[in-house]
Structures are given as C-alpha cells and as structure tokens.
Length: 223
Image (cartoon, rainbow, N blue to C red; front, side):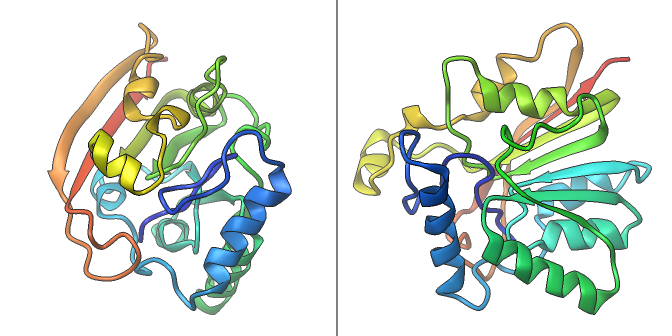
C-alpha cells in the first residue's frame, strides 16, 4: 500500500497547498478516498516490512496511514501502533479493517504537526511516501524527528523525485513539499544514518503501482 498525506499537504494528485484551510485539505483527501473502495494496494509497504522485521516490537507511529495496511500489519506483528491521517474517510475504512482482523490500533484524525505528539515517545516513526508541506521553520521534519525516542528509528520512504518537466506536467511544485534531503539535513550528531539508498519497488495494484523505485532513509536516534 502506498500511504497518503500526513500534514497540510497532499501527494501528487494534486492536493491543496499551504494557504488553504485545513478543512479544504481534509475535504480533498476525503473525496479522493470516497471515490474508490480501495485507493491503495491493501498490502503493507515492502520497505517498511523489510526494515522492521529485525526490530523488537514496541511503540510505532505510522504517519499518513491512509487505509491502514501498514498499521494493521504492524499490529499483527505485535507492535503498539498509533496511526494518523487527515482523512476521516480513510481512517474509518482502516478502523473497520482493524475490527474485522481483531487488532487494536490508535487512530488519530490529524496532520503530523497539528497532532502535537509527545516528544521522544515512539521506538519507530514510519513515514511512507508522505506529502508534508515545507515551512520556514521545518515544522514537519522536526515533528518527525522529535517523536523518535532515544535509541529509536526514523524510517522515511519516498519515490525518486520527478524531473522538473514531469512535476510541472502534473501540476506539482516540488518546492512546496518536504523531501528526504530536507530530513537528512536535520540529522545532526545525535543521529546515525543506517540506510540511505534506492531500491526496486514492485507493487501490482493501487494508485501508486506505476512507481518502480523506493528511496529509503533509516536513521537511529542515539541514546
């Protein structure tokens, strides 16, 4: 599954940008989810599965959880999952799946920054293909980093950046959105980068199936 947005932004599609009110952003995503019975593939993201398999389950934050495939899989592996998204339609769909599968997830209807999560409270913070708005104070990037507990892991996965021409054709202004480079730039001596690479991506269904590569950033917060 490819995740949806987690803050006052959207993913290529295109969602409302920064100046618009939060209810307009929520409406955009609610309408996109409502137009389909299942927007994404329904399967957990492969990069997430690969990166957490060797970790001892603890508290994990799923940023931009969408229809919940990652969150549900994680809960089934024994993780204590908090999953947030701006779309109520997506969260309701995810919650119904959780009930059917008999797992417990804490669902938060919020953007990342607005959620005001407790600092240093998650063993893993997972952001799979997030569309976070870039701000002058790096609010979204700092919210990701601040949520990671000492000794914990930040896992951020994105698609390779499109060319300027490709972005323009799709109505996307890349300068509006946080990229992995923006996150890496804030990783100071309190962090150790464990993975920073491009991998093949194989997804057969869902709105993101046309993407064939993942850019994976995994960083550990030092104790």
